Image (cartoon, rainbow, N blue to C red; front, side, top):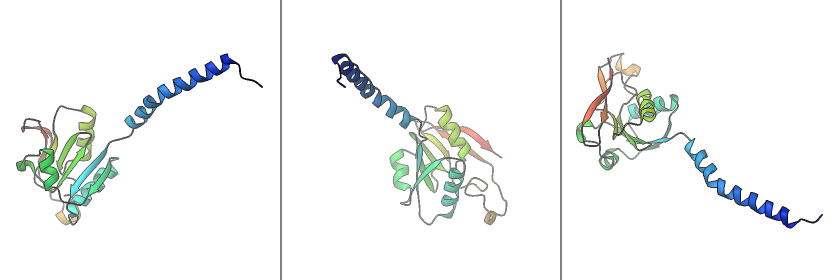
Length: 159
């Protein structure tokens, strides 16, 4: 069977159209992938490990770097006054301290123009600080939205 010039032309047009659509298809596949949070923490910190487990059990993908978090915190622009024992980065946002997964998910959904979220210090009852070794004690705490100009505002309160 011999191919006609019309069939060859059609095949070339179809091939060209497929090549033109390939980058769009690849981009849509990448865009549908959930973001991965990178977390910098000390390798021996137990509460950080529990916090990472909390994130994963809530459906967040997490990559851990057991290198400490001071360098990451500085590089990402987290004010020292908001520092905690671990620092995360996800989808262009910084997550400092024991921030609940649901607030991270809310941040990713709302996409505010901000640096990210922080729970300063290590409040008892926050994710990672809520194990049996704390005897059920709970501190009231706030999740703060860090603004790009160095300010903060309350994003969520926990009793």
